[in-house]
Amino acid sequence: MISSYQKTERKTGSEQRRQFLCTVMFCGMLMLLGKAIFLQVLEKDFLKHQGDIRHIVDVNVSAYRGKIVDRNGEPLAISTPVKSVWVNPKQVSDVASQHITGLENLLKMPHGKFTKIIEKNADKHFVFLKRHVSPVVAAQVKALKITGVHLDREFKRFYPSGEITGHLLGFTNIDDAGQEGLELAFDDVLRGVQGKKRVMRDGKKNIIADIEEISSPVPGRDLQISIDSRLQYLAYRELKLAVKSHQASSGSLVMLDAKTGEVLAVVNQPSFNPNDRGDLQGYRYRNRAMTDVFEPGSTVKPFVIASALDGGYVSANDVVDTSPGFYRIGRNVVRDFRNYGVLGLTDILKKSSNVAVSKIANEMPAEEMWGFYNRLGMGQSAGVGFPGEASGTLIDYQYMDDFEQATLSFGYGVSMSVIQLARAYTALADDGLLHSVTLFKRDYDEDSQRVFTPKTASNIRAMLEHVVEKDGTAYKARVAGYSVAGKTGTVKKIINGRYSNEQYLSLFVGMIPAQDPRLVMAVLIDEPTVGGYYGGAVAGPVFSKVMSRSMRILGVDPSFQRDQKKPLVLAVQGYRP
View (cartoon, rainbow, N blue to C red):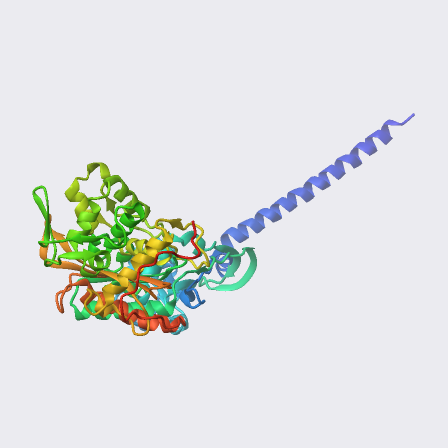
């Protein structure tokens, strides 16, 4: 039995322990409260300073934009790392006036501009002062050690060939995003994906240590295109000289591989330098060869004769009487330059007779003639995938009368771009196969379509060789050592709804070497005002000069040049159905 004294003694010890524990806990709480008061009140400035000088943040890491290279690997568009200068207005205070002046001079800012920026953006944490400065300028800005002024790494696009490839490549904006041309069309492929990393910054927001990589930047993919920089340069130089010498308003040129449909050169005038973004004018950076359409004039006459031959409406030995130099269709009249009398098929193309092709066209059902034009891609986009690529127009055969069908035969009432016209000629160049057109390098065109028989295509090329003879319309398009087949066009422009007798388009489309063409090229000069306006005299020499050098660059052996009329081909080996 436990005595009452023992119970009282146990109870007293237990209470003492509880009191002790409560006292310890109370003292601990007082200490924590005191520390908190000390830190929040007495050491507030110290802690703020420590937080400022040791600030950990996540920052974006720019991804490298993919290169664009030509068919031989030559760089056409590359991205280079640069620095951009920015300011945090909230951090700027008590900056020496000489430092402000030095910064404004380095960044080519008007005097007092820096102070105005700070005052205007006082509530902001980030304002760019200058994007994409040179390494020398960046180093000098850093040396000023202005609190609140910082440097970040970005990428700037550079185009080694400048204005020579400006229309094709386009350009990026200051954030390295595609805005025009291939840079825009394939922006998703080229641009890559930004990365992210965790860094420590000092009180001036300068990165003092990389802590960890959160995600790596994914570089954009490179693009290899079909352009040959050597041929592109030749084409650009000669087109620019022609537009200047004829005081024309503009010009375009497209060169295709006759066997694959690859675009080897595409140039326009006027041009622009994508490296100089301070002078970008809309009318200069339009890729006219792909976006602008025109009536092709006499350059479509070979297709009419080819269609009539394949359709059995004429034979190789047929002749057409063009007397008395005009052809009356109802109340309308088709005229030739003069009365050519009776012409065979070759001379119809050589003399470029409107009367003869009109009579041949009217022998064909409108639906059948329209079908040939349609299969050649007229009224449809060339399918290159270039931004703003034009489709042109082709009147529906159901709405054609005899006169409209006649004018269609010599290239009025239909519109197309230079690249569409060049593409159509691949059907004559590659024995009747019309090629799809591509801006990417390839060895074979899987999408080619047969439009003419090999026999007809070869016969038309033989006829077109006569066009570049001395008494033909394109004598100035000849190339020494190589046979050329081609057709001129001289087109009246529509001004205020009427055909002008003063403003013209000068055209030439040619194939070389004529017997087995390697290249097809279409040249357009818009509104020449000096040195004539006929296609053979204005556009023909451009073809001659560009192709003369191109044949040597590509190592194409000199070919037979006709000294006399070559008989038409009656059979062709290796027919590809």
